[in-house]
Image 1 (cartoon, helix red, strand yellow):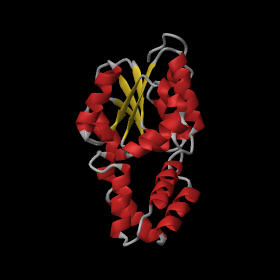
Image 2 (image 1 turned 45 degrees about the horizontal axis):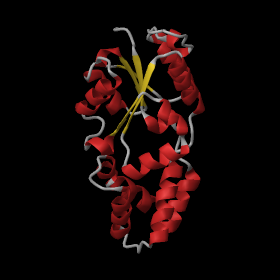
Image 3 (image 1 turned 90 degrees about the horizontal axis):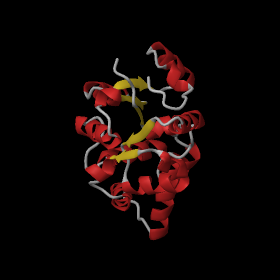
Length: 215
């Protein structure tokens, strides 16, 4: 394994926790639909939103149109706010670890499939995102995980070769693509399992980083 010079974090389900059910219920209320109808339509056009083909406004208008629901300006704002709330439950152990890496002088980055309104929402709620050395947000590039090009972009943004990057994501397809791009990977499920995997990879020293530490 190459020396780790930078740690690259997925946002959803890594830096943030599970979706907030209250926010999901609020979106269902605004649209006036049941859970199955909402879930299917929520994900139907999400990739286009993440890739920047649809803006946040256009995404929600398309969802409402296909559900045959009228969408007022107020309802649109409620949906945008609730969607941000859905994905802004902090995963505090990972946030604190990222901060510890930054204090130790280890480069950190964020690589996330995310739309324009969602990026604005998480930046507004989480000022600590600005402490990451580089952000790769899919909607800005028109590409998304698991496209190999987005991992290459992230490594270049961090200024290190891909084989010097540790990438953490919750989805197996994204992890597999990162490995193909040359990165060391850990698939995140629970924090306890994450710690175990780091130790198994011989990266336990990164869990309590000190200045000028690389693994």
